[in-house]
Image (cartoon, rainbow, N blue to C red):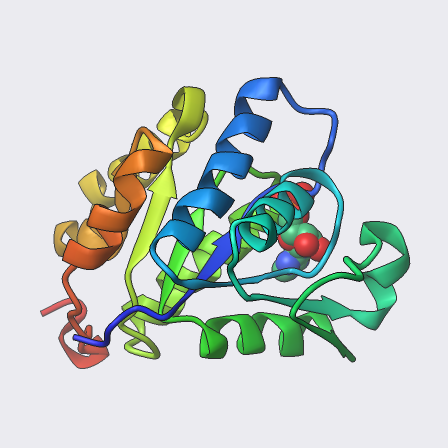
Length: 194
Ligand code: AMP
């Protein structure tokens, strides 16, 4: 199992959300820094993304941001990061975020966060990576989505075993132990329906 050095955080870019999500973002930055892990994220200073970055930086983490040029204006890049990469496309951003991290944390977020979460799972299902994925279910935010994924397995559009591709925790405090104990199993796509 690879020792975790760097954790990629996916979370919302909206600043209009309830304080409970903002508090979780600040706590997550601190918690990652407390483990001496680096943070990789989307590079913006808006919403939960900015809060995670600020709190990790304040607590001594290295923070690496990766932002596509065409959304730089909308998400407003964070200018105080340890490293900021301005890249040419969303695809390059997503690939770099996956390559630079040893593990992934999904906090509350919108469609962009969902897209990133599902891409992580589909890539894992195809055997393209075997890195731990932990979803933080603050305020029950992801409960309905987790139920929907279980229903997909129940209806046999995915394998029950693949439900183990991600773990769900209810608090930020549980993130380090969940990441450290996550199984590293490389999925063999050739066995998918056998
Ligand atoms: P959101 O969860 O929608 O607030 O977005 C969180 C992050 O996901 C932001 O950095 C967005 O730029 C990014 N994002 C939005 N749409 C997509 C997409 N289709 N693919 C990948 N990332 C996205």
